[in-house]
Structures are given as structure tokens and as C-alpha cells.
Image (tube, each protein chain N blue to C red):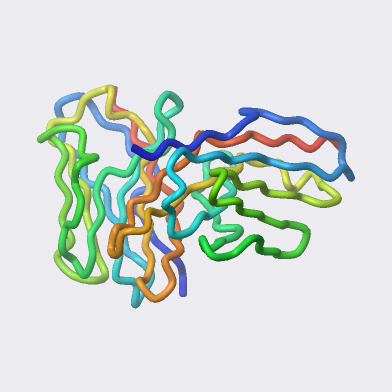
Length: 114
Length: 113
């Protein structure tokens, strides 16, 4: 059974710093990995989708990397801003065709201190 | 597109009452998912549909929960009878096979008292 872990559960950093969020998964047979952001009381917003054949994806100040063989992904946020404060979740999708059952991590609550 | 639309946004009901949550997926998406989020268990997949057909309902906690998708643009999640432990945020999400990237609605916060 796939298990996804995100450490740390919470992180506070001063504005302007670069930071890395971690996601690890136990079964490396994944189709892709998706990073989401969730603001308090809101739904999930997709940030980046990285396919199993890819090593990284970039969107603006965000960069996601994937090391499938070691079961790890990182989300790098450059020049953090107070607006980046949110909970960040990663989720993996299995490889078998038609199986869309995402397994989510428990999330990292990020606070950017102005 | 307006994205995935869920209603109501908030629901407060008494134990034993029937609760119906509604979802309109993004037009053209052929997968629809129902998730539940709690502090204790995080995000859990309850059930998902492909082309209106339930594919995996192994996450549905018990027979009190049922989900339907009568057409490509509408789905319901029903709890009957509701219990306080059902209190959670319920999310609907949709995706398309051509690009399996899930898009989530804003959620329905359910409180059963």
C-alpha cells in the first residue's frame, strides 16, 4: 500500500528566504506526482505536475523535482513571500492504466514571516 | 471554465438527518472524485467515477454513504443517516484522461451536531 509522508509538518521562515518542502513515497511505481497548495478554508490548487519520466518542473518561483527510484520529491520555493503561506500537499498517482487513485501526503503548513 | 463547483459550501445538520452534497465537474472531464478531509486522517479518497461509472468505492466508509453520477455534469454524495463523526470537509475533483491532473472544488464543510 502506497504511503506518502511530508516532513516537516510545519515550517516558518522569514520573508525572502528560499525553502524546500519534502515529500517521500514508499512505492516507486508511480505515474506522476502532483503538488498542491491549500489555503485555510479553501480547496486545493494544483501547482505543479511532474511525470514519472521527468526530473523536474518549474513554474515561476516554484521548482519541483522528482527522484522516483528513491521515492522522493521536493518543492523549492525561491524568494518566499507572505502570500506563499499555506499548506502544501503532494500526491502520487499509480501506474496502472485507468487507476486514478491519488494518495496524498499529510501536508506541510508553511508560514512566511514578514 | 468556472472550475469544479460544489454546493453547498457549508452544511450544518442534526444527527440522523440525510445530507446531500453536490458537484459539477469541469466540462469535458471524464473522471470525478469525492474526497473527505479531516485533521486526523488528512485527505481520503471516498469514490471515483470514470465516464459516469463508479470505478473504485473502496474508500466509502460504510453503507450510510452513497454516491451517484447520473450524467457527465453532475454528481451527488449522500449520507443517510448522518452522524457527528461524519463532520469533515468534502471535496469533489475532476480530471481528464488525456492529462491526469486533478482539479478540486472549494469543498463543502459538513458539521453534524
